[in-house]
Amino acid sequence: MDPRLAIYPGTFDPVTNGHMDIISRALKVTDRLIVAVAVNVGKEPVFNLEERVELLEKDIADMVPGGRERIDVRPFDCLLMDFVDETGATMIVRGLRAVSDFEYEFQMVGMNRRLNPEVETVFLMASESHQFIASRFVKEIGRLGGDVGHFVSPRVKRHLVEKLS
Image (cartoon, rainbow, N blue to C red):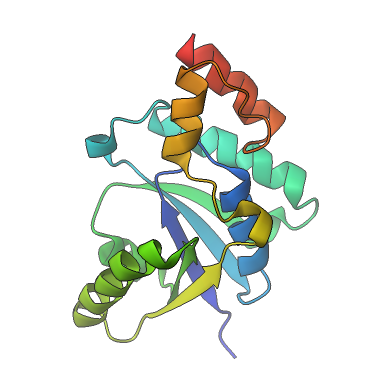
């Protein structure tokens, strides 16, 4: 049986505890996972691409001791479905926080199925304690001097505070 390779795409600016929750849970439904970090300059990220990749790699190493060989963190700057084809993945993992996420994700699945009907999208609901976390809110709280420690790892908090000061 071929190993199930999945892609979990996102901007991860910054990576949150909610992202890490989805990563850990995605490992339960796939054999290997590529966390695909999108360039996405349209969102004007706080962290550059290399910083986002490095923060993810370090948080994943802390979260999944010994399981790191099942996860790769890779940047991408092309159409997601082209990246999926390039990697040989057969599944896309997406996290859902609320009903409002579903409408956007539903449209994306339809577009992606048109581009490659062989690739499945799997939705994982955010854990109850992470349903409200969004990177944009974390950045806003950080910009206004609030404590983001409940939403990100200590490493990410330290880097975010440094970036925003």
